[in-house]
Image (tube, rainbow, N blue to C red):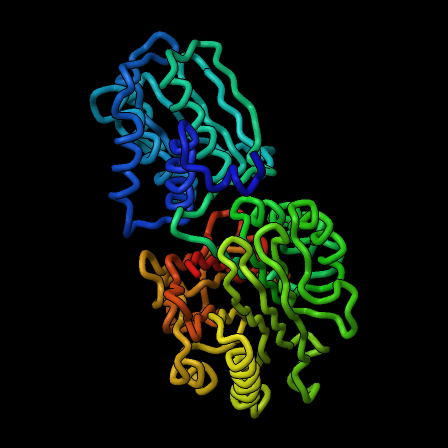
Amino acid sequence: MTAREESVSLSGSHSCFIIVSECMNIFCNMKKEILFLVLLSLAVWSSAMPGRKIAGKNVSEFAVVYHAAAEPEEGKILADSLSVSLSRLAGKPLAVVSSRDAGSYRRTISFVHSPGMKTFDYAVSMVGGNMVIDGGGCWAMQKAADLVVAQLAKGNIPSNYRLKGTVEGKILFPRRPDVNLRILDDNVWNYRHDTIPDEWKRAGADCRDDYRVPQYTQLVRAYMPDVLTFQEYNSHMHERLYPRLQQYGYAMATAPDAKPWVWTPILYDTRTVQLVDAYNILYTPSKWSDQNSKSLTVAVMKHKATGKTFAVLNTHLWWQGDTRAPGSTQARASQIRLMMAEAEMIKAKYDCTIFVTGDMNCEESTPGMQQFIQGGYVPCYKAATLYGNRDNGHHICAPREVGIRQSRRRGADREVGAIDHCLIYNARQGAEVKIFDCIQAAFTVKLTDHYPNLIDAKL
């Protein structure tokens, strides 16, 4: 079975993996809107399991414990997820408590995050008859919890139970069967230095490319998109990241060594899509291009499974405001007009569905973005027929400020505060956006100040 076949297979026992993987995606990114469906899926999956024991004690005697200081997706959400599965085994609800309130429970299953644990590694151990699930992040801890439930489905867990593993290199979030195109978009932060800023040193954190690249690699591997769109993609990052992505079948739509450097590349999975045409346009005058980093990349591709043609336009627009650089608002509007002109030429030649992605450094209400909106471009979070994440997609992360959840944007809602935008235009032959997501697993917070965006669509 190929990696792609593995990610979409719905037969036999693998269907259980897909249910749990989709649930993991939802929990890690806090999709409260469809929490009920997640719990129902877990309940159905475990409905036929008989009562089981852990270290000789009935599962019903255990409470699920999360660390009081943990982020929701690494604490309470994970604990709630596991509790639902185990409650079916126990025949009664299991308590979910924080570490502050766990003292009154004799038997516990605790989620912890040891400082030395790598981001994607996990370990399960029994300590004094209690279970400890340790992991470097929510993806790893959820995988460990899934394996514990699977083990209980087969039989009892002994007092000497041990488990170690990693989710690195694993496909974690297979797409729905009605999704045949997946696009992943992210501004990867142009921090090319081989030194750690003092603020990050004091926090015990690292923002160098050598540290961030393995995490970006697993981000891509976990979702296996057909198309990748990046911004602030410098040559230093490219030297480290591109060889890793090539191992998973990705290629750049434009020449990898193009001059001037392409800061807004489009990459594609060579197994699922075929490149038809690609080019990069550098925004001029240079005053609004910031050392050639502001540009537009266009790629026209053919989807191999359906034979349908589609296009992706990826950009990074000028960043400053009018107070610091008078004329900035109109400069962005001019750059968007150029994008729209390119889109019209693609529409005239191929009459295909067009996706637009990028860091546009302006909100929907601004003149530049209103050109898109009034021109028939629909934001993917609004076009999504199943789920559209409305988070503004930003948080603090800079050399002087270690990544934290706080956002300084105008508002938390995407319509008000987002400056990263994903849009669909000229949808053809029933094409639609099914899901638009803003990936917010905790490890992404220290990668860049932009959360990755995910588009699951049907051509």
